[in-house]
Length: 497
Image (cartoon, rainbow, N blue to C red; front, side):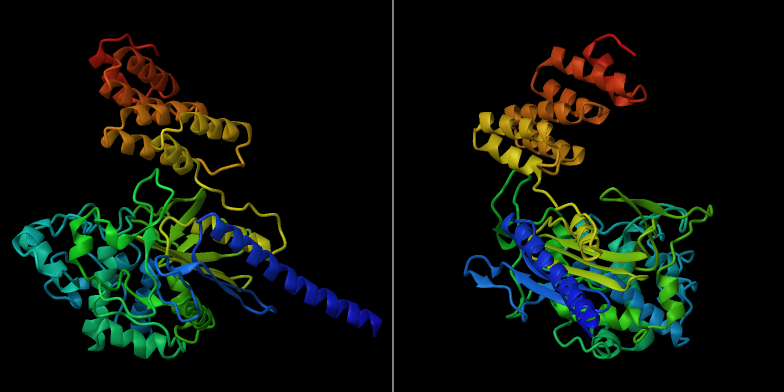
C-alpha cells in the first residue's frame, strides 16, 4: 500500500512540475516582450496546460482572457487542406485532378489540386499581382474571386514548371477555397462551420466575411515599427508594405478567427480521425516529392523541414513525427504543432509580431519530456539598434561585447544584423548603418555576405578605401562572390584571391 502511495505521489508531482515550469517559462517570455497571448500544451496522462499572458488591448490594459479571439493567419491552411481532403474522402474530387476540371476558366491546365496544397503550382505570388487593378479601382476590395480574372487579363506567366519546385504561396490556398465552394455549393465559411468547427465543437471559431471588421472579443494587434524599435505599436497606426494587404479580403490562405482552446479541440478531433480519415490525414502528412524525385525541403530556425498538403514536418523524426503550421501577419504570430508519436501538442497565439514561436515550441517539447531546453532569448540586433538610435553608442558597444563574451546572453543572427544595417542605410542613418555592419563583422567574422554588405554601406558613404578592404575580405572568405569581384573592379582595386 505504501509503495502504491509513493508511485501515485511521484506521478502527481511529475505532472505538477511541467505545469509550474511551463508557467514560469511563458511568464519569462511575456516579461521580455517575446510572447503575449494564449498557450496550450497537451500530452497523454496529464491535464491540458492552458494559460493567457498579457493584454488583448495595450491601450486600455484589458487582459487576454478565455474569450479573447485571435486571427490564426496561415494555420488556416491546415483547415483548407482538411476540407479538400474531406471532399476527396467523400468521392467528390481527386486531388490529382487538374484545377481546371472544377474552375473551368483557370488558365493553367497543367496544375493539379495537389500542387495547390503542396505549394508546387508555380503560380505567381499575389504581392504585386493586383497593383494595376488597385490603381484603376482604389475603392475595390480584392478577394479570391478576382484571382483567376487577373491571371487571364494580364496573361500572368508561371514562375516555374508545376511540380518542379516548392514555393510557399498564399494564392494556392485561395484557389483551393474556391474549389471547396464550387464542389460543396456552400461558402468557405459555411463549409468549415458545418464540417470542421461544428463536429470539433469549436464554438469560438469563425471565418469573418470582412477581416477588417473586428469583433468585440478580438485582440488588438501590435508590432515593432522598425527593426531597431523596442516599443510595440498598434498595427492600425502603420501602413502595410504592400498595397494588396490593405485592399484585400482573401480567405483559405488565412482569415480564421479562433482561440487556443478551440485549436486544441481541432487538433484533437483531427488527429483522432474524427473529422478526417486516417488515409487522408497520412496523405496530408507525407512529404512532397518534386518532378525529379527529390523531396522538397528547406530550413526553418535551423531545422530541416518538408511540406505535405497544408502541413510542415520536421525531417528528423528521432523525437517522433512532428507536424506543424505557423502563421504570421502584421502584429500576430501563431503556431499549431503536434508530435504524432507522443500525442503531444503545442498551440501558441500571440498578438505581437515576431514572437519566436519555433524556438518556443521546440523548447516546450523538450520541457514536457523532462529534457534540457533552451529559453528563447531577446534579439541582440533589436536591442543594439535601439541603443544606437538613442545615441548611446557606448552602451551599444557594451551589449556587443557582452554577447561576444557570452553568446548565450542574446539571440543573434546574420540575417537580422544584415537587415538592420540596410534599414539604417535606407533611412539615411549612415553612421548607425556603419556601426551595425562593423559589429556584425565581429560577431560573424567568417561571413562573406556581412563583409560584402559592409563594403556597400562604406561605398555609399564615400569611404572607397575602406569599402575596398571589405570587398576584398568578402572575396577572401568566398572566392565565388561575383558581386565583390565586380565592386573591386569598379572601385579600381586589385583582386586579392
